[in-house]
Image (cartoon, rainbow over all chains, first blue to last red; front, side):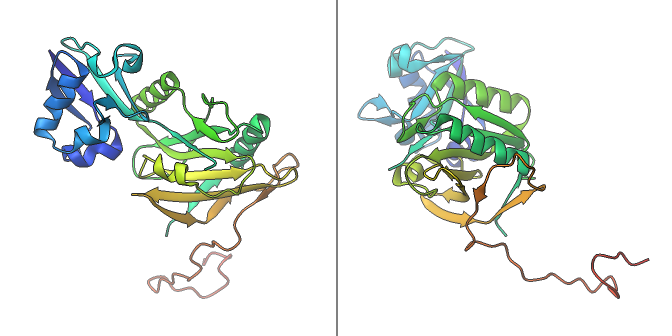
Length: 92
Length: 176
């Protein structure tokens, strides 16, 4: 399934500055592996111990994938996958 | 010269937000045009989805809506602010770990004192924190928040003289 992956500013060093890249896959995991095969280093910023980093948000269209199976969330032709690092912090 | 130039009404709004949410941490953004002008323009208070006195996080749905809006407006988050309610207005280890907007000014407000809010700004890039001076544009009004900036962080005061234009009088009187 051909999808558009939108890349946040902080990860554009891995895509040569590109804000968005085309990729294919049937799940979020496959899409990430596909992007990684052309833009090495990106996967490590997104996946840890075979799960999405707690503080990186990934959406398929409008839905946060943590409510749709995480890495196993399904992806269809024409979908947009959006990656947004959390905006968070705290006292300590 | 790194500096945060911010409008008086935005400073007041941020402090008011921090006071309102105290003792929970408050958080938000000031978006500005994504053209390198580094000008904070549109104030956007956010809900702290963590609702905690020690942690803040933009809710995942709010985050997507915010970034979609900014993309549609050709904006970027120029200021990302949050408050500390019991500690100083300095980035904590967690703040540094989660700072993922390399071009943003990270503003920290402390509401630990009742009478004055500490208001400081930082660049956080690759885990390194650099405090910058805050220049507030616009005079305080009677309703303005009592704010304490960091007096030890001042803009470069070295004067830049240009000798292309003869300067024969006071600087505040334009040459005829």
